[in-house]
Length: 457
Image 1: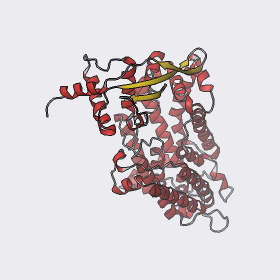
Image 2 (image 1 turned 30 degrees about the horizontal axis):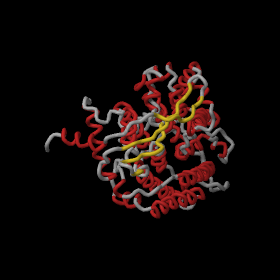
Image 3 (image 1 turned 90 degrees about the horizontal axis):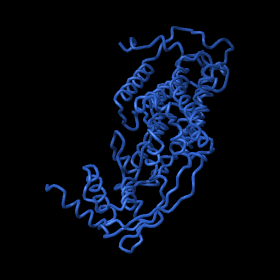
Image 4 (image 1 turned 60 degrees about the vertical axis):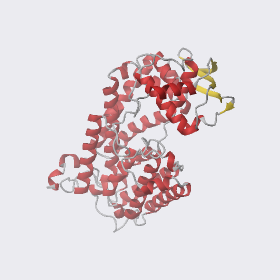
């Protein structure tokens, strides 16, 4: 029955590589894994501050996440396993150790924040468990076997995972924002909002030239949609060209928005022309047998396609194994609405004084939404406003509850000094921070009123 699941027509596009080419690819990929291991930022999180965002909730993960020495040890295990895998020492075993450590590191990260930059690589690594890594031999000679598609699957698989993710990202942009994402030049908003991390200022030039913003928005959608075609590329040079297209996209993201995702970037190693290293000089893409997937490969392909179809159709995200890739799918009807959304990110709190005591160090303990609500209350001057919508009442109740839990009693009065910068859409540059007029927040009175209006249990 499983053999009936084999997609013969798709298997013919998997390159045939021999053990020597697989060995060299394993060496390069292992170095990429070492880069990933070194780039992981595993910071311990106390038990009471852990967020449990992952699909699984494991006690061992909580314990590792709460201990900095354990986090450091996990990172060291990843690094050592990656280097041993690159060297070909018990390759399948050391690869399994690396993947296990990487999965644990992702789960640890999810106790602190999201892991959007790690989910797709994790799924790719799981699929690579089907590859016979131990067969790779860098040395030439009698140990080199005839080119096989079971080895070539190692090169083809990341093209499928990356292609599906980019196609899903393009679909969700259109689903969420329609053609307005293109015609409105949505990239200009993302280039401005991410400029603090950008490595060049080209994005600001694009942002203030509407035609350029539309052109790059259209180009981004097209590149995301067509990259999946790499899985049909025949020959090493066609695969290299396909990889270059995806590489250009990620280089652009790095330069213009500062998006640095080593776990994603290292996957592009698979698009190099590894089949040219085959021991024989014949055309390595002439099938020596009827093209088929092995059972494990079939299950991996069917699983990832089905999971992605479900995630994209339902807008479901289950970290770290499923996502509809909604990042940057939003746009704004106007520049004014964009600036309103960016106001919290453009605002800098200089001082926070509660009942005459400086509590600036307490503010970071609040969640982001609560800090924004305090800033809005200080700026609007309506902390004792009675005519509130149901949503505003709920937000204030959450603020009062979390403020008391994190910092203790409510102060009678909080005075904030804030500054805000902005973007000049004519000059294409940010202007300096300017002071913003604020009024004291009567937090105790506000929260007492909120408590009185809460329904009795």
